[in-house]
Length: 106
Length: 389
Image (cartoon, rainbow over all chains, first blue to last red; front, side, top):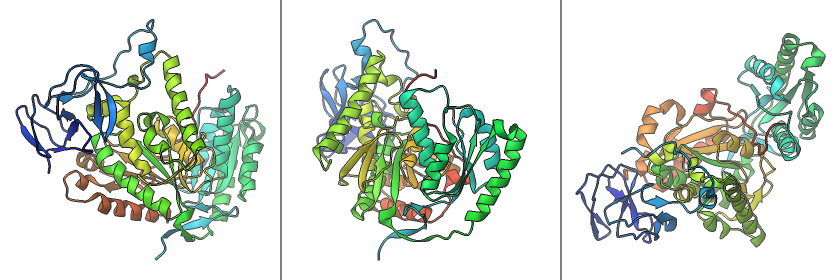
């Protein structure tokens, strides 16, 4: 089984098909990337540098915006990517911050 | 060889994949009696217990009426018993008329008129058993695959949903539609972020516009609450499974609608699906409300993809569970009909998995029992938008 899967050649992230330990070297279609931190199975790893404000691309389409600079090999998830859709909280400064129901497990 | 299945040809020309006696409570107050009548006539008898039917205004009242009437007229139903209370808003006669219009025998009972729970339950059981005997002789006959309306659903999604089960189902959708059949996709919030892919397949510009308008409405409603849709989308389980944003979830979810099937129509909740090809229905993302709406629209079989596993069924339509997660297939084996986790470890191709699913859909349409049916999962919930008054 391949350790990671890239769905579209436009993507800047790959999906881990097994848990990746930090330091794991991956050859992704000719691009060599080392995991900078543990990546749980099913989670995403950056294939190249993604700057804060840049779109994160999976399935060939944007899945959100990077909220911080992301190095190649980093775990890409809710801590460094934000959705751009249905964000009523961004337009309502009076609104209380919503409690998150869960954080991703490590 | 032409593809098809053995179904029940109804007087209105539509085709059923099941032959139930449907026990319909008009209102929450008659739901328990309806459930008891159905329980005494299992497995033919099946009830639609619900929380609505009174204290509703305008659009919500109409949605309740239309959904219940749609089930009374549904081709998977052979006969109907309406259980009323007597003072509620939902009109029992309108539901009975929907059944009659589609050529089904129907009876009405009202708890206040019959004289209480015990008398109504006893009389209801006698009537339901009589109707069950009356429709028992109806035979299945060969029906072309173009008569099939397949509901496409996903729930408890994880990263395998977008990579294995949803693309397998998408291939089945493309194949079904190319053979003249119909598929319906709901869950507007889970199209958000992938609407450009579906809109580009609309056969007329007005359909694309309608899709975008509905998605904009859902997004505007979330904004109007001043809330972050991330409170529910993706769900906590989705996030643990590796899904980061609603856009990512939607792009994976929309694979269920295939890659080629033209988008023919966009319809309201539980509204009749009248055009062959792919239809999008305006349903919420909540699984049971979504399946309830798509079956109300006329779907006779549901395919439900899952990553983390979920038991949801429907009172009148078989729900087929398919997963690409090997652990879920093992741990929730009693809920899962089809394991396509081989796609994830390269031991099965997407095309081979899609072939198996296609065969399963036709076998289930012809009467094969699904896990949800075997386990008695018959969840039903009517969508509502407004407060109870």
